[in-house]
Image 1 (cartoon, rainbow, N blue to C red):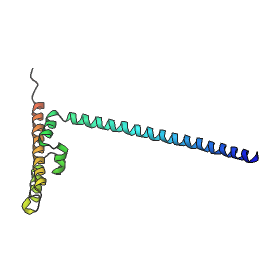
Image 2 (image 1 turned 90 degrees about the vertical axis):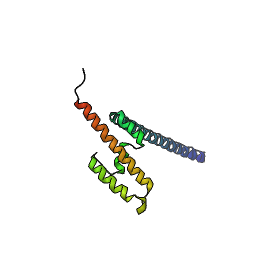
Image 3 (image 1 turned 60 degrees about the vertical axis):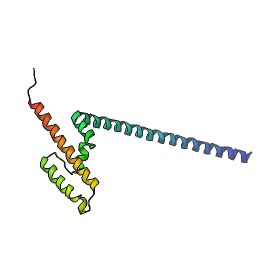
Image 4 (image 1 turned 135 degrees about the vertical axis):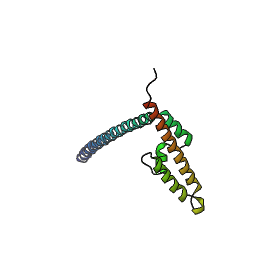
Length: 141
């Protein structure tokens, strides 16, 4: 009997440890699950905020992005421009167009991207000028 009672006691300890380990695992999974759910909610909120910001940018700007194949942000990155300034656009365009000329070992593909970026930024300037004119005009009654 002594041998069996020792095994039974050991089984109780092992069973208790297994139960404790299972509880730890369940708690860990719950914590990770809550953190994942919170991160997902934050990502959805950020996505909604970005979509709202794009929506405020106007339908004309979105249409210009579709026509040129470049978003305003992509065009600004290509020409390394932070603010829409016609002078800065032209200066950076001329520089990038020259350095990407095939005759100096450049890439026609990159040169095309530079041209499209300039066109997209010029279109955005036209859209902004038109919106400014519309805001300045008194409403028709």
